[in-house]
Length: 469
Figure: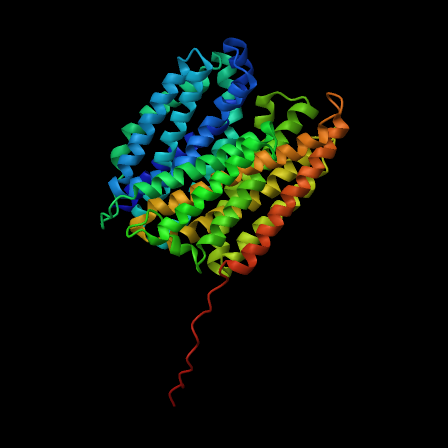
């Protein structure tokens, strides 16, 4: 495969990844119009928004294994088609139940094609330098897509109504499908037998975990429903790990998580996603509820975060090549800690300057870490199982981001509960408390990265050759 065609394949899968990020947040700005038109309850509204993340987070691990077995281009294509059909169903939906089903269908489609994006990059770029650059682009696009959701969604909803948040996917997917022939087909050449028990246990366990995280702020973290969900998730995921260690053809190479860089790298990615997605949620609320900006105006002010991510994604792999992975990873997480210190100090009278500083610093930090940790994971997983490695990377980030929004949002909600509506002081106090939690998580991840991720490899020992007389 020519290098030009390989980079064309990278462009196609990154475009699909950008669409996936948009779908995470594009519907948020459409909720007022959607509720006025269809009248869903608050619980139904939450499921319309969260059904996408639930299906994606719960099914991505099994979907990655399916892609490895039956073909990653096939999984990519089927996932895009399913996403488009579900989007079409949502655009013409007339009830809350139809929209919840549509969002879950979109998440299932994303679970199919998301692992194929990263595993395709690994397959088409055997050169390590090219692969590092492409993974840097992938990591930047993965973060930027979600940030542009409110901007794109605000413009579309303002002109065409809430249905536009669903119609958006249809023409974009149609365009992507025309470029699918650029992607080469790849699969696990060993043709391992399927692992239905592993797929069922992983899906059920992750679904229970993500459901508990999403519903905890509403039901309460100590409610019977949420505790039952977490207990069920623990039992199911423990059973999954036990089965993977004993299954003759496991879906996930659990032993890879033992002594290598995979488990600390994936945990650092999860904690980074916890911190950053929680921070974006807090910042969005601050800009709209304290500063009084519209969703679209708040979305525009997220652009510096995207720029920081893009710059960091370029610099991170370069630093890792010279100084080892732990330097950009730990350094990036310390920048996120500094960003939380800035975020926690925002007040009602703070202008755009402090907000931009927070976004630039924390975005740069996330950009430094993401491609380096992702490349560590994908390099440690056999190429034949690239889909599973990608899904493992995606699943941990998805769970981390969902947990970050829920936990930091809950800390903020606790601080403002009982305060009069619109009490700015209570909100900024809650913002400070939530920022301290997020900063502590990022600091713990920085310590983990420094002590568990690889440093600079020692260079060759010089051999002294005597000069000729």
